[in-house]
Length: 134
Ligand code: SF4
Image (cartoon, rainbow, N blue to C red; front, side, top):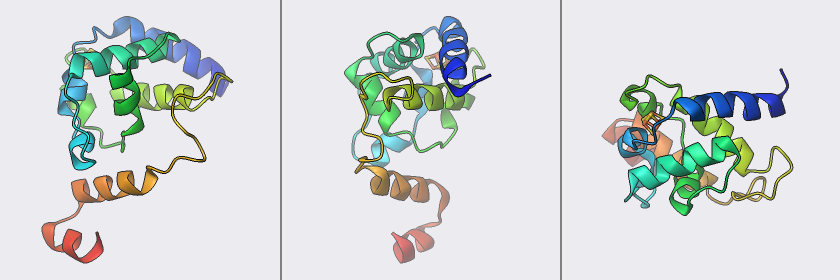
């Protein structure tokens, strides 16, 4: 399987099983740490599902996918027991132009990586470590 076929085939398979309930987006701890909380989890999840289908994503979906720090909290929240981190990874690659489409998220010019590293750090460090390192 190539990367492109994984994005297309696994993306379509997982999108077909997703109900866009929004539980994953509601459980995601990253956007609040980045100062951009998800205000409409269903719209964010609808954007994730659309991206996996190759359809136009919602603005909420693009923002949520761009803020993903691989916390994995989404997986535990999914009532369908889907591999949401994998879905986010496939959607992120697609939105960064991995299939040759116009990128909706900046790739190598991404300027938001430092904020995401800090957000991930806050999820994994003690208060004392955060005070010392962030
Ligand atoms: S929690 Fe699962 S079913 Fe609900 S939107 Fe997220 S991936 Fe889809």
